[in-house]
Image 1 (cartoon, rainbow, N blue to C red):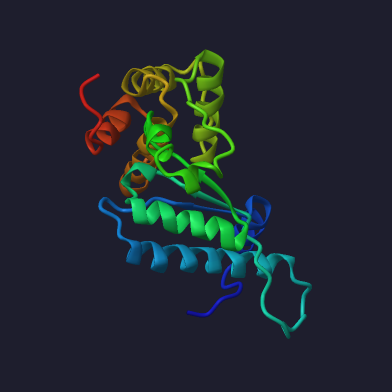
Image 2: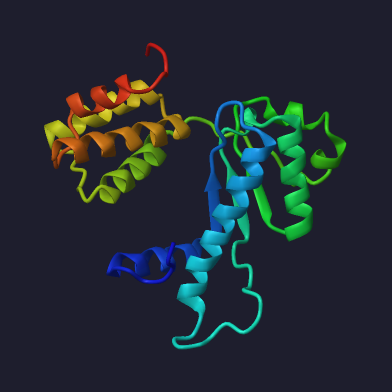
Length: 212
């Protein structure tokens, strides 16, 4: 694979990565140590290369080993990791000095407490509560904007879609993220330019989230 600008949109991605300096990773169900050893170094290296494209002066030739730019690794669905997988992340944290955030279901901190070497490196554990009115409005407004749309409280279609989203997610931030991934997919596949109640319900039908 050839790295470097291939189209104008690539430059924006490089700039965004340079600001974030972070990699987001979701392990598969039953994730193995072999997968982690293949996936994480590859993701981090690719992010490093993209960031380097943005920060390196134009025309400069690399004559020494490339600098590591990624400063943070965020692992979602960390509950899926085996004990060996968690130990691998601890080793990665120790060796590369990269920040580590584990996102999981409530109670994951209890599991980590059983592994002294890993738990001794935990700075803090934070439990996210459901988003409330102003927080939810802020997040939904940003989600609409990310899709190139403008949310209008006075518009019946938007208000109905918001009410359905609130009913389905109950303000759960992770569930909101998962739902909007599917909403974006449905809009793109069907060539739609508005989030409607039907679109939200269609997105919900692709997720296993129980009856609400």
